[in-house]
Length: 240
Figure 1 (cartoon, rainbow, N blue to C red):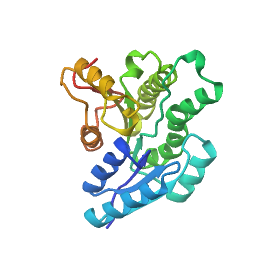
Figure 2: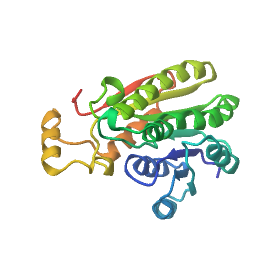
Figure 3: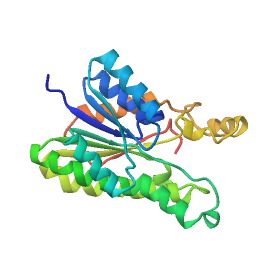
């Protein structure tokens, strides 16, 4: 059976894992990528293959490095869907941040988009069909104190999304982003119980989002209207 193929970066946990499962549920072969959590990747791939009868391939790669992404695509070939989800955060004063920490956030969250899309897009253009979904943040829209690097990376992701969508629209390739609010994942475990309660009080929906809700929206973008492109869709429970 000739199934469509999807690449998911940052797939070992949280939003990336939920999207990989949703893709498998919808009949996509998945290439689950992360930098170092090989056991989590293998478990995810074994479970999705067994449950949904698709092919799931775990791949260790640092998508923040161009040479690593080049090797990745030499291994996997063309993709029908790309989910750029790999991301890290840094919480603290900008003046306390080292240059190395700044580059680490920008490499993982923003430069990875260029490296991955540069390799994936030629295949999509040739087929005149493809979907790219970038997992962004509300902080890319409005900025966050104590998260300057993260906000800058996600703001860059939003601009990258809009620009690339215009570039690829004549080739019938759609590029969109989901700007997430507070999603209940391991990335937010840095907050204590009181901080989480205060944050929840700010959200009109009175709860954090679920990774599965992000995955469901990503699938709508993948399977939906081909005229919808270049959009930054906010999913935050009415928070911002």
